[in-house]
Amino acid sequence: MIDLRSDTVTLPPPEMREFIYRAELGDDLYGEDPTVNRLQELSAEITGKEAALLTPSGTMSNIIADMTHCRPGDEVIIGDGHHTMIYEVGAPAAIAGVTFRILPLNSDASYDLDRLEQSIRSADLFEPPTALIWTENTFAGEGGIVMPLEELEKISAVARKHSIPVFMDGARVFNAATYLNVEVSEITKHVDTVAFCLTKGLAAPLGSVLCGPADFILEARRNRQKLGGGMRQAGLIAAAGIYALENMTLRLQEDHDNARALAEGLAEIPGFVVDSSAIQTNFVVVGLDAERPCRDELIEGLKDDGVLVVPWRKGRIRLVTHYGVERGDIDEALGAFSRVMKQYA
Image (tube, rainbow, N blue to C red):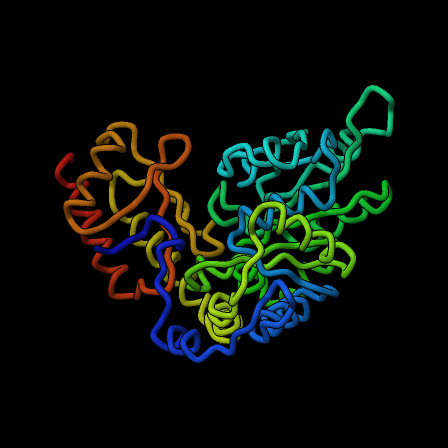
């Protein structure tokens, strides 16, 4: 099967598995796992932050960020469609006790600055104070969109004016840096804290890293423990992360190129609606001509022909390129798309 459902389906390469096998281990809760310590130091250096914390997942990093930045009842300004609002099972409310003030996002995943500033609440007796402004880069909700640096800088300026921290869900921030052709730190310098995934395009089997000021990370460590996220010989996870940061980040352009080739090929097949010029990273969101088959029929037909995709918002389908999907797979997938669509011509 050619699996285009998500970059979460990646498998670690043999070299990463060997690196895991040879990892030096210790007890991380005592701060004695040298491989974890190395990953955290490397992550802090890459993001330009003082310290970092390894967590089992991006969802946990996001929850810990809420818990550490906010008190129960505080309000977080968040964009309509941000991952934590839709796909994290209500954890911000259920676990961190925060409320959301949801704002629409511009096409480039940024906020309207006037509306953002007007949405910031004061410390009024009757209102939940605004404790955090949330950003996501890349923005998965509309197809791996990268927020322009100048827009992120403007958001940061509004936040500083009101002494409110900015957090970035940077699950795929290395894809954003690849697209912008900058170091990750050029993106993350505009936010107070950031979390990125070691899985997805980086192909590690699990893990996320939360980065920020040293005092923030110290409190985040306590909150990780509350959630049961404290680990012992976690160097097995950290080793995969180190290999990913030193090697897998260097090949992300290949995924972006494959996504563009996929989009360009689909644009030539009657029945599919896709703007190949809008492809920025490794996501391709595809619409269907109204006169063509229903989406579920198409997905089942593609599965029968050896290609896995997922349904997406507004009647569309989403395709994601990643490690393990090569250019030849793109050509094969396009053949399957063409064959399945011809059945309904």
